[in-house]
Length: 402
Image 1 (cartoon, rainbow, N blue to C red):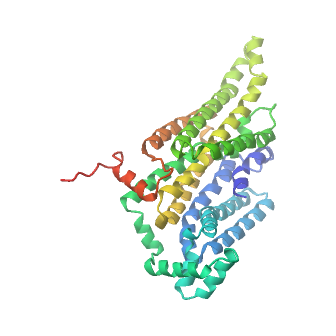
Image 2: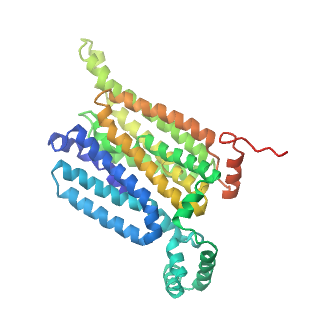
Image 3: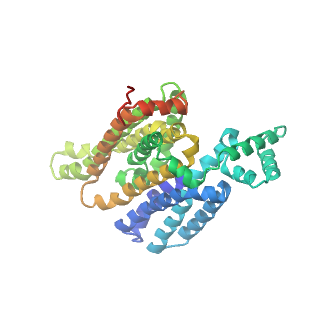
């Protein structure tokens, strides 16, 4: 449902605007307010997880999201439609950082959740044992794992606030900065801008907007295959950079297409030269945006999309990973909010092509920063990565021993 929430504005944009339910300004808020609400709730999801447990937060998120969808489906007033998107965003933001943690902890005993630790810490070993026996296989020695949990709880009773203080260690701040760059890059690529405004970006009566819904998965499937094959062979960093190069190319192609249909082709139509007019109606111009969208999705899904979250898992030590996950969610959704919300406002003042070109230039800057600052995490332990950050002269000078 999260992906559906991202792309919801696109298929209904034309109908909403033609029916005068929302104007351009209101539609920008309708599209972007989801991300602002998700950013805020994503930030508070982690402390909620510590206080209420993973499962409770996921249930609360599901209830909130369901209420938002019911409100959205039954509303026609602009204020209620926007309110529904806020409610859906709150639910999505709560679940986004928690669900991966919960799944990972069920699948791997080395990354158990705090929920079981809390159960054990208040002397409910029997309940913990029953829970583990349910989650693990029938013949699994759950008692031994409970003993391990008891030992961990005895050794480490870190509270949420104490984990926050750990973030201010120099290594954690450096790693957090790199992860933040990856999260900003994820959304500054324009992935949710395209998802929200694909029908408007096409802006061609001869192209059915639903075609994009059929064509985009082609790039996504191909990207998944590429990622599975290459990520362990060439490494995360190189694949990330190649992905950014593909995204930058796709953005320049998209910007050029918008420049043609918005400014150059209308100018050509006033000339008597039939060849110039025909060039704006050619089949190549119809295929251009479709192929550009496929290239974009292929580039994004093969690197920029997943690798930011992989870096979060590999660069951030386990003791602060949950906290950083919340910050990462906040940065991710705030970047999406700014881009999606202000796109219609800015493009009322400047051509759409210039906005897309600006995103491409910004991604060039991010690509340089990521290539310079991001270590290759493939095959390295957290300790080895910590040493790399400590020796990285871009962040700080090397210490000299007298």
